[in-house]
Length: 367
Image (tube, rainbow, N blue to C red; front, side, top):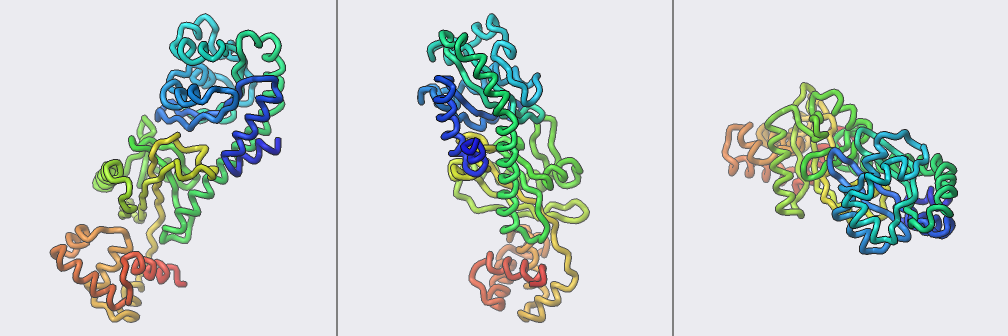
């Protein structure tokens, strides 16, 4: 079980565990995969014993035709199930999934598995496929082994989920202007929510700043912010290297929302990789409460000898507003707003806008 728990720290550990399991089981083709049938997100297939071409075909196409995965949605967690219990053989053999994916692999009709995690229509499953000729010899011992491993595998997966949430929060805190843990969410290009930490789920449930619709897509309560977010998604799909975007989310208190494109392929050694869509570009959002400091404008003017206009521009920039938005708020041209910002940066002796934001964030925290 050491190899299984190593998967909680590094997803590559699951690969080593599955290779060992295939060998110890006498040739069962083992796998672990996740699927979200609402967002149509595939969390990837980790396997041992399958041909590489079949793994590629599953990830790119057959995962969405997997009637066995859909069938386990109706069964409880941690209960070992044979595939015949999930889908009757007569029905299974009539499917494209069987005809073009299971049968070509020496008719790997037998086997079974266990549900490790289930939430709404999202599942993580550990299982194994057994060739028809080996069903009588291998299936019963395999299901017994699944019953023994299930609690350990669930614990390892839960550890990975906790670590993934902590990793999101560490990233978010580094970019946040709030000392409190922000809400963190990962969504795909269609806005469907793939992952959320506890604070993010609480914000979704409250519905004052963000909410989820019936298709589990994120929506901002303020229509203008929702439009900004949609524009950002479109830009990122066209220009993947676009810089992170920040904007203010009004909800009575005021949240600062920061968004960035997140590439799953860059996270192969991270527990978070287990919970992101396979090969799919995702988008990382953080929502942190805007710091309220009535004395901050006066402190900025005194310390850096800023004018009132320069102070306002600097604070608006730190809140995530663009120059165009600042100009509109100040009722001046973008050219004037840019000159005021340049003047503020010169007095604060910084060359980059990020350094200006860092100074203001530090002053807000009283450091």
